[in-house]
Image (cartoon, rainbow, N blue to C red; front, side):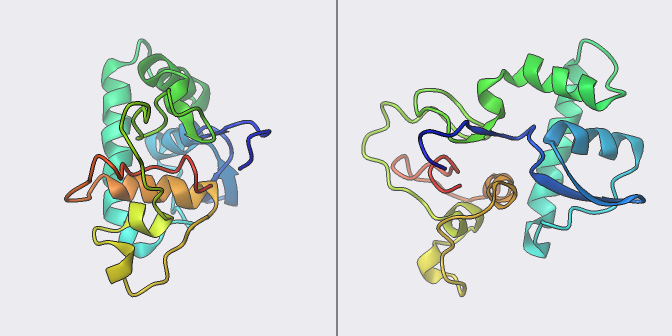
Length: 170
């Protein structure tokens, strides 16, 4: 993403979902609504090794949003309202936002010293990319970055100079 483009949000239509009606792209709020109604069959853009951490992250997010929502989450619009109310608009930014603001599953980066950009492979996997059998993927789709961030919540360690994030790799 260049500096002249708008940030990519998790609520943009970046997540591919399979439902009884076929495959389409939706935002995170719409995916959560599909989960709630039982309409989500699969997330075809997610790799098999990401399934457990991504499903866990979605379950935690869904449970927390429902628990603290001001109203019952019965529509995608209400899920969007809950995301905005509880996380704030800054935290809905997946990539392309300023370093002095939080982003989705990513901390503020100002004041953290010299930071090393991570590849999507390094964000996603428990071991460093140099030890991984795959070549490190430096850039990817917003959907790939979202799943990498969700999978990164299972990382066993993280260095302050290497906070996982998608800010510079989408």
